[in-house]
Length: 196
Image (cartoon, rainbow, N blue to C red; front, side):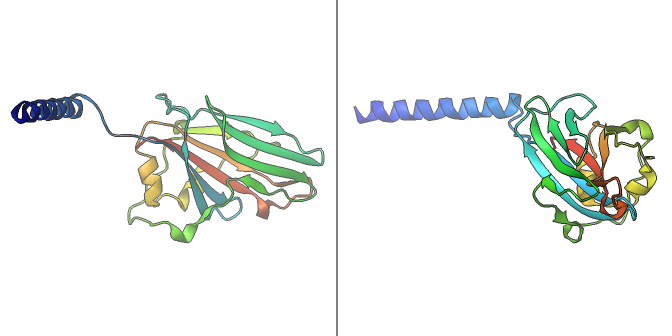
């Protein structure tokens, strides 16, 4: 009887090893997270100010655009810009816009400061303008100085990590103060999406 039990256990163990081996040979068993990165760049100086990385529950879309929609409430006195990653409508940005005042960024709650990010010796050259995707058209529209926006983020290690796919590079201008607003409060945001 003990020999029979040992034989059953040995047979079961052999079967599990064979199944595990088949899985690792024929399946991509690595788990890839759908991630989005927001890089914050000062509107006037084009200096990189910080970044926020978010892991999304929405599935990663295998198409070249970043699937972001926005909900914009124009500032009569108080307005808002909220951006959602589709299809699950996960908030990736939410900021208030105040006429003759200043509105806070509500999401992301904090940005990791620029000093925390490693830089490489070699910078990435500015991609062709067709690679960029404007995610929100500010009112009134402002010229998009892509070369200047790219200048201080071009050698960030994290940019290289996120830029290795075929996705477009999103960007938008956030103006928390309008009317008699102060452009020193404004920021460009570069948005990258990756599952690497």
